[in-house]
Image (cartoon, rainbow, N blue to C red):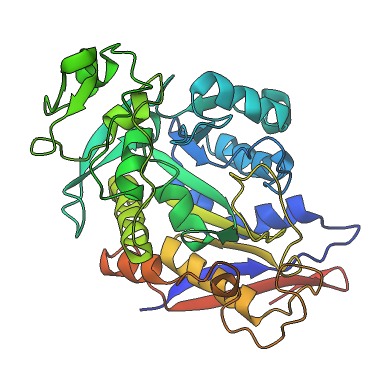
Length: 376
């Protein structure tokens, strides 16, 4: 069965700007029906890494915040802490980064809550019984929210090929230790020269797989270790390095299962908006943003995260390449994101569909401005 995806292009005029078009699309997509009075609504965004200015502008986010308030809901902007050691690795730095990038109460009209707490320890184990995980670690504030609206910037990614709604929800709502489980199937190792024997990893390990041995350094028993990533995420000395090694199909399927862990709790209470603008080759987690690979194509809204990502991918692949981008003068590229990162882009869509989160088949409902009138 085809899912409905609503689309509007980026053309504007004096009677309707992008904020108006965002509201119009969200209304047509049924977003008002997602919110009940006093619902606590997680507005899932990416605040951008410092140095990257391709992330979605705060005024676009405020449109959704205002709509939630009109229905009597109580919105909050949210994301989870990162696994890597950047400017969003803990809640203090994360909020400061958000503020520096323009996400304040004055600009968006809602508070910011980093969903997994100060250091990423606040999460809920949600059963999914998937291909890769029996349960997933979902950030508490997102798990306990009554509804979620994910606002996603479509762009490239070195592991996923591209990032859209499923990656935003799946990877973005997991705790740091959950992100470690997503990124690697390897047992972590302790770098003795960095270990300070503080005992944090021992306290965090749920399987008592870590102990102090000779030289008073931490030791991980591989037979007991389940690869949960708690020690990696919480070692203050960074003595247990992040393992990034994983197969592309595996991390994409795992991320779909994390998305399912978020959305299965919110059936009929989840909405998705994808912006195909500033389609940079790399993720908003990068501290830079390169020339977009295609022009600004439009905005999509749907209640189906699989369908909206498939539609986004199709639109990018159908658009002409920007010649001074990383893709250069190439004109016959069937999969532009694969051409950038040499990664298959559809494993996450296939697995999302297999988990019954949505359908890769969609019915596109287009709305645009022509002579100051809406045309369908």
